[in-house]
Length: 184
Image 1 (tube, helix red, strand yellow):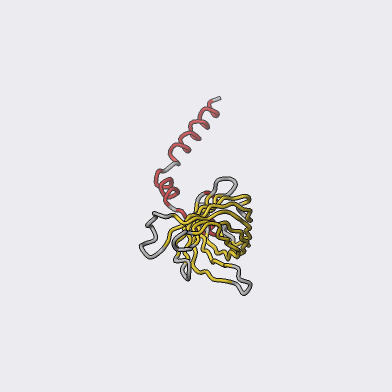
Image 2 (image 1 turned 30 degrees about the horizontal axis):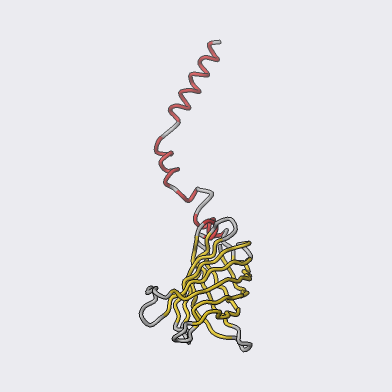
């Protein structure tokens, strides 16, 4: 009985005296021993193919001035289906002169509510007369918080309403499809 008591007291003393706050502080501040480091997180990012198909409406906003005095501001609303997003909705703002300058920026909202930000970097026309626009993905929310990538959209925009004085289109519909890559 005395041996058990002595053994328990010795074990308690060893455990109590064997602990040091210096070792605990080193553990908390030395991130090289952690299993989940920034390198491991970056290794989980993968570049994947991205495909999209969508449609919607667009309109010129008559009093909007966010684009500057020489450009028209527009709003694009739509929906579609895309890899990594599922069914999505899209809301874009555009600045254009309707001839040779088009800039788009906005957000795609995935079926689960995650957001993917995109902005245009170039646009033009295919040999078949379809419009194309190149986009860059620039973060968002949820799984797309640090997403990067690119997308080429090809489609048709059909004006349905024209300004009575200038003859310029002020509203219409569009359909498009696209391909690119996304990293997240």
